[in-house]
Image 1 (tube, rainbow, N blue to C red):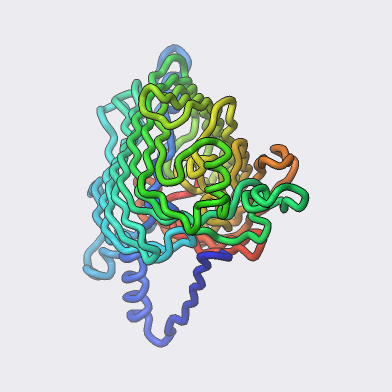
Image 2: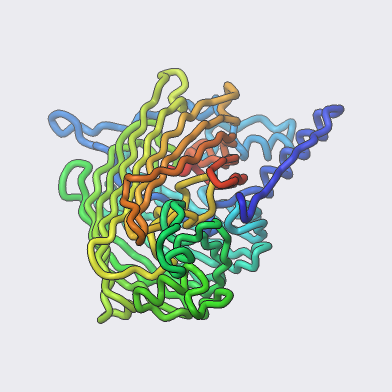
Length: 452
């Protein structure tokens, strides 16, 4: 990244395999993270088709996990090298690990994280319920605490998703729009467009509480509703007077206070899904479309109405290695009326899990209308599936306030990475990606699970 670039080099010794194994174990124990906000809430997911012809149960396809090798197997082999694998033992659904991370937005991070996963009830089609919590501190002065959950009741009749976040943040800001320079407008217009792609650090205290419930209304089709409260206080940006920064220009033009705001609203969603796993899908479709209505009578600084879409499609390219997958993702957010606070504008890595647009910092591009399209090729490298690889690309587009329309200008991102199988039962993996973008942007991203 131009602003928070992280360069990683590795010079592992080759003389002794035992030393290499020790170094690898230390690496995998220490690295467990998520992007931007340290942890993004687990992506929304609902049930697959559970009833076939004549009402017979369709059990999900199962895979021989005994032939796969994950982080738990590595740890056991290091600590107990002579102990045989117990194929009948069921792994614990609770994991507590150090939360060591690094990415261009947050810098270097140190903390602790706990993750729990469990299927509720006896219906084999019930999807995995997930909960997580973390507390961490980063080299860029970010303090972060969160609790989130994604719970499926037996038979996936209901799905409850929510999170609570309390943090002290530093947000890099590169102006409004998709990187188009403004040469003919006013001085304020040029500041808002940030022609020089200068990074402005915005400090603030951020609080978020969100809860959403989905109910099945037809096969694979769900309706959801909920509320979200997003509050920022003590917002600080160098020289926020006289239209000196992009955020101050935007706030002055749209009537927002410079040092605080609230974006409190109602959520209404329709969702369809047939994907086989929320952590790492091999096949299926996921689609969600929703309306967010921020309202002043429940505490929002301004009224606004937004329309959001999220579409994902997965193709497994091999029966022998179903992990060989071609995946596609498109998500967008579009302002229908009203005004959105500057730091809540849709943009790079502003999807629900803060994962889109690898190659750029969060909100590097942003607008009142934003759309991102991504494709990724995933493939196993080792026969035991412990190490896999990916290659990916993305195209982002946004509008701005000096004439650029949505889908008029696109900005690319691309890269490749490795995957380490962390938990084979839940398909949880550790993602290590290096990505490139325009304007000299590049970065190393560490996450838990796939970006989509």
